[in-house]
Image (cartoon, rainbow, N blue to C red):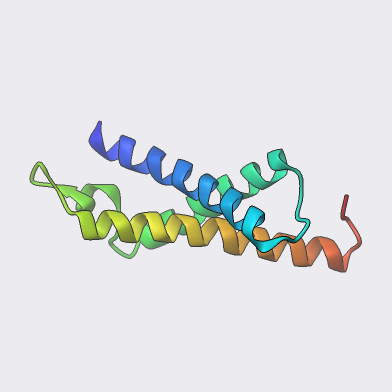
Amino acid sequence: MNESLIALSSIVVGVFGVIIYTKLSNSNYFSLTANVIISVFGSVFFTKSFGSLGLKPTTIFSNDSLNIFLLIGYYFISISGGVITLIIIKKVASKYNLEN
């Protein structure tokens, strides 16, 4: 149960990270709905990629204790995954003129 909560909260943190990034960057990215969808896919992809390297919710919450440093790293990976995916999709869309 705790591992599922960590995984779901990392997706929510990734979504909020992308929303804050788009507000602070002053660039016109996509709509809010598109940004949320892009950030969900990006954060899930990055956290699953790093999970195969050993950073997964079961290692964050092992022996009934929470490792806060791994949790912060997991959230950082989720945020950076969402932002990097948003930037890549924006570049691809501008290359093919698929913008709003």
